[in-house]
Amino acid sequence: MEFKYDFFIAGKTRNKDNILKICDIFDKYNVSYYCFLKNDETMNSYGTENQTEEEKMQVFENLGLKSDVVLKIFEEDLENEKASKNFLLVLPAGKSGHIEAGIAYGMGKKCYAIGEFDATDSLYNIFEDIFEDESKLDEFLKKYNN
Image (cartoon, rainbow, N blue to C red; front, side, top):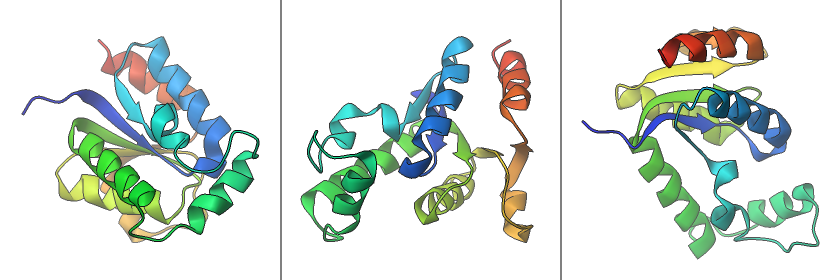
């Protein structure tokens, strides 16, 4: 199967700064990825430009589950997850990121995570590796790219 991206990067919008730092590491090694935060069209489809990130998230969380915006984001995320060879969850992550990890694992993708998790959970064994920090991910991507 031909993939459009090497990695699908998932996490929660409230962890935006950390996720974007992770994207920078991928950029450093020219490893292709899809990250919902880099999709300007999606990120600007709710709220107004005058609102803070938190206010925009509150607007999004109050949309109807079957609203056009929510369904569009769902379809885009799933399409791009399918088009990715591997999966990376940036912790801490919310329900959606964990669901996306389960979907990726179910599709047979190699799954990874980065960051600290609150407590041991047997299902975290779906991850090939949980990188404790950015330097460990950096080492991995350096080898991945060669």
